[in-house]
Image 1 (tube, rainbow, N blue to C red):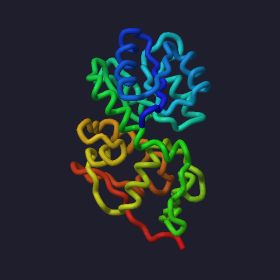
Image 2: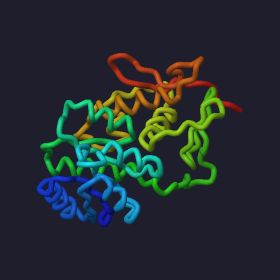
Image 3: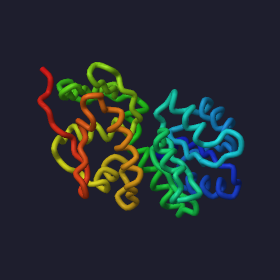
Image 4: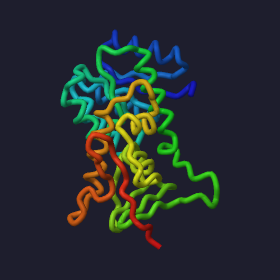
Length: 240
């Protein structure tokens, strides 16, 4: 993973310098931005592998930056928040952020979050296709199709735009129908960080995914909540 480029958007020079130091010590290249407008410029110029994005920026805030980037890219975005209990975190995840860290943070945990999100991101950035010619390329269920090559999802023939993490969650669950997974298990399999599981991240992404897959006649048809345990994909006979 050495040499991956990280765009760090942080307006506090001391925090920015600390994060940059730890990232560079792990072999990452780092581009800095101290404001939202500068972040968009640097994003267009450098095409980073991941963005660390502070929510509270002067001028254009992190939410707006995230929204602008999500219109054109599925690059992993990890929010940096000042308040662990803030509704800002949930709002950021709903807007398309993949994960978050809170201040003050352990720099090693921050690096672990970056590494975990990068490990799960390449197929969405580079559009990799299945390795074997005969490998399944379409998951098809009652009214739902998931294109495993282009990572596109259709419900009743209508394209449903999903974030990278939402597609990953759907594919993971749909490939193992009727198997119940806890929030911790989903975090570990999709975000890939065993020791820093964060159930709120998973809950927000699952909630958003379920709502996007809804139809007027079928609410929460595909992903079921097993109260107190976790979630499962409800199996249906594939279309022929």
